[in-house]
View: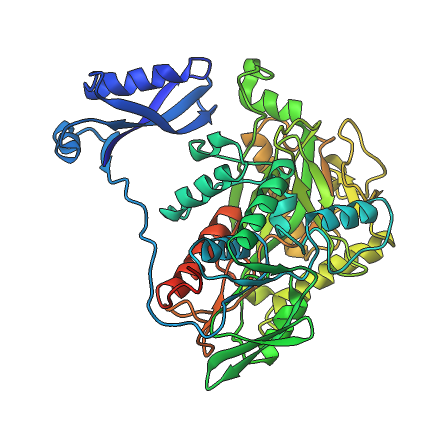
Length: 529
């Protein structure tokens, strides 16, 4: 049990010890017997000055709950430090559990099951990270697209080629478990207390490798380049999965296939797995010089060595539709994220240092199910493909359509770039960056850019650069599951993570993966030891 003091605001250049002293002063808990530690810290540059805002945990040899209630201070609260209990079932598993997919959800499901003795069998359609790096670099250098091992598919999932953001709004106690696990396997230790933690693709890849090794060292088995091709049900319950030309009997399987496994969606639907359409978003990537974003948000303190590269979060609603920034990558690059032939798909990525010249983010426009209703669960997939293929036809290659913001707002094709140079590695073709998007999305982007420019000076500057399209913001389908986490009509099958429509980033997907593992563990006893 602990006392938490929130909202401790200090100038950004003061040492952390000052926050601990201020929390002690505010509560009167100044005794040497009181232990103090920072549990969260963030940068706030919204008030014309730059502060660090701390949450401080105080552990004192008193009745902490009664003390916090007596203070009657809104910024002081009491909280237990108890972690979620690890479930322990008693039934006997006839076969080891299966995990399909080794992105954040599948990795944490497999890691949790292996840690507690359940020896999972893991199928990943793509290669390991070394194979992924080779395939991705070859494609970006003008080689062929590998449709099985790429930015979307392979060890670590799409999150392995991202900024490695660990922010979420889900507020689940298992978030701390995720952060502690990542730190234990090589992520920076400060992620456990940063309000906006990130790892970076360069560091995250090694963390993923280390967690996968832990899976196998604890009795699990990982089979790469092995795609799920179907499931077998008996009397509405899971009986087996098909993968790699084999049919593997199992009573429990976690489906963490990711948001781009379109062929897997089709196969599962034919096998009786229930799908429904889900809203998602489409848009473009916008790039600025990182130093200009720093100046806009930090003012005279831009470039200060104690400040991280500035990041932003923008949103606007009009007529029931939203336009918002998504997956902002300070000091990052726009990447080629195709997983199907003859398509163009963009995403964003940055390394831990975030020291690239450009900042980039998706500018996404919400797409409602009514925008693509075709009477099937897969109208959203159809719309995604339509956009991606139209962009490919537009450039005649895997190059991405690109355009200065000034040209886009003037509704004229772009002919080149200005101060901001494109980072998209497969090359760009200047023209109309958003032409492949639905007309409502183009209109929303044109209306929103000036509004965002009023919030962040220079955001709609003429030389800012748009590259499109961004279509894989989230899954366009949901594998609906009940309160028992089983897919509807498929007892034992646990849809999980972004691909199932139950997560929106690394952190929420990882938490969902742990919950999927716990669902198996609460019913069955470990297989090993």
